[in-house]
Image (cartoon, rainbow, N blue to C red; front, top):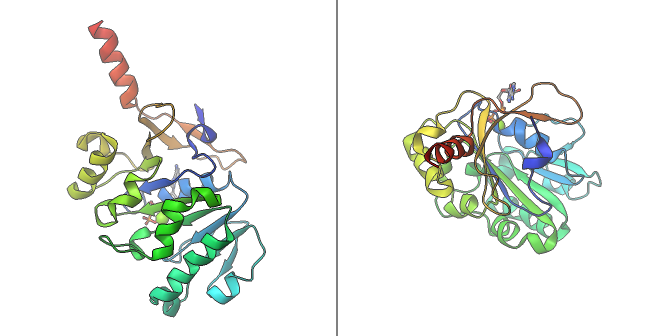
Length: 231
Ligand SMILES: Nc1ncnc2c1ncn2[C@@H]1O[C@H](COP(=O)(O)OP(=O)(O)OP(=O)(O)O)[C@@H](O)[C@H]1O
Ligand SMILES: [Mg+2]
């Protein structure tokens, strides 16, 4: 069994959670965000019911908030307005020192287009203490940079071939490995000591410190065994 801390992003690392609907992205992201004191979550789907977070539907109210953990669930007029969405990311960028979590990045970033300040948080957040985490059901439709720049990828089951292909290009996992049972995921770090792709699932017990189960055998173990057999 592993601890969540072992696979959690470093202070200003970026992370991507991808997988089809219901696969467990948001649940894992919530656990990872628990490890950080300052979090701003962008909730375009209106799905985040996270304990301990103050929720705001208007940017004008959000930007006055003092709580360390905030959710911005924009009302439709604000979500549909590119300038307001960009102003939200600008506020995060100027405010510094937090995790910025975007619960469905496709809502604000398609193809190669995304809010300017979102790009700033993603590519220049490190020096400002901002760690950007994104989640997406459709990795093939979000800008490649959002995934390729992430130091940590958490990949749940992907149904569509184009999504699997995108993630296998980025991580080196085989297409067939991305056919995963519900709530299981591959953790693929892109930096640091390569702990190899690990196949994991989040423990169901909702204690203070989440644990990880190793449901099947990870690719690293399989590869290790193949090499041992060959030797
Ligand atoms: N490890 C787990 N063990 C048991 N239940 C889980 C686990 N992970 C997630 N769930 C449950 O599965 C459901 C779907 O999880 P979650 O909302 O995290 O999926 P998602 O990938 O974010 O889906 P969507 O793309 O639709 O937002 C939730 O009810 C959640 O409580
Ligand atoms: Mg979700």
